[in-house]
Amino acid sequence: MGISGSLVTGTALAGVLLSLATPVAVARDAAPCTAGTGPYQRELEQHLRLPADGRQTPADCEAIRAFQTRNAVQPADGYAGLATYRTMLVVEARPNPNTAGRCPVRAYRVACVDLDRQLMWVQSGARVVFAPVPIRSGRDGHETRTGDFSVYSREIDHWSDLYDAPMPYAQFFDGGQAFHGTNGDLFGGGSHGCVNLRLDDARRLWDTLAEDDAVHIWGVKPGTERGLTTTAPSGVRTPPPTPGAR
Image 1 (tube, rainbow, N blue to C red):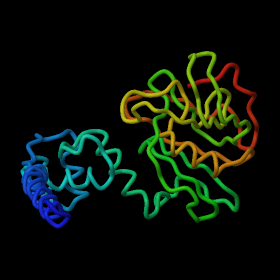
Image 2: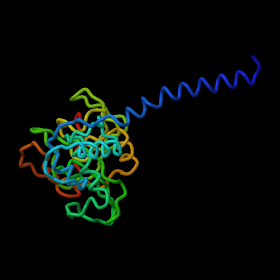
Image 3: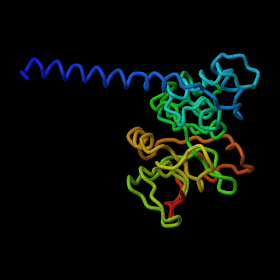
């Protein structure tokens, strides 16, 4: 067989393989969305401008699954669970995270931490310089303290002696409480007081903030009960972490 014959054979084989693969891909794309009603069904329906009756339909499921796919929520199965709801809050906050005016507008950078919505951003004046991202704050009994603080210490590769765990891109703002990255699930449980971020977000926050930058924290993490207030007046530095919280 000559070169032309080999080309014809190769082309034919490729066509056969493509014809076999295409139905599989189409079938995967067309897989029915069968997830049931989730705990945040009505909120997702309202966000996606669907009939907000709190009951899952095939159309609702498809719309929620498309939202999950656009925003890298896993699994993208159409179920309106906590991770999808928390992602929705971040998406809704992006145009103007400070629409309620809870974070003070200053001429300098302020890291704004909203415990109610479990998200944070950084603004300089009225300009957002670090867009909203999801966080995980302190669990019940280990609540992240609220009030006005400042970044007083930074350690890119900190290790918590207290919890024997890494705290990458740690930026301390109140005693042992710090912003830092984690590979864990941000949408379940809580920290020991620190403000946890996805590792990539913690890295970008490290590049955004510097020592002495302001931090303002307010609200209450859903599922916690506390009446804690700030332990440090505005502008007062707190002592170094010994040995550090997580």
